[in-house]
Image (cartoon, rainbow, N blue to C red; front, side):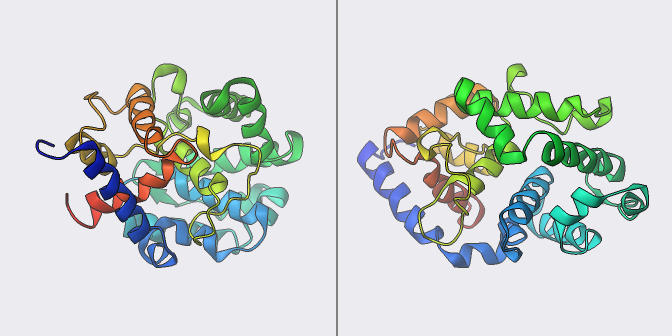
Length: 257
């Protein structure tokens, strides 16, 4: 944006982070869905499934994710661990935009394998992180998730950073699970992955504001754009660059910046 200095951009992002990173943010955000749970496994599964369908109108996302939790008797971990064919029948008819019950049932079966065979979502992401940072984390998750036998149709709902995907929904999940700043919004349940390494969940609002502020030059919303924007934010806060997701998202969605 012409006429605004780097210092002014920094001050703006910090001020907007402080404005939006508070419990009131939860009231109109999809993160309210996992906030309805208290155990680690329920929170991370609810977060994963909510993040999976986190595109489109936020009210619609909340409605769809809440309805999904109802179908699982508000006990997602118990449902997944014990799900048989009769339980999966209860998921028929679910749809959120292009994600339908066929995709959902495949996801539930894959999650069941992850918890029964691979030690759970956190373990899968941690293994990849140890080997190759956040991109390694996302690649390892996709590899294991796809091994469960996803159909070609359903695989399109699992981001592939090796092909340049921005992986917005998986980065959103990691941000929810990893960040811990005692402000009451994110959960901070996964301790091995560092907040310093997180990558920004790049959606259209965040990207538009970032470009307006000169934080992002790349025109395409892909993995290279994620790396570029996250790098710009690390210059402001090397330890927690994704804290400014609140700033960019808030400016875009609430203030139509």
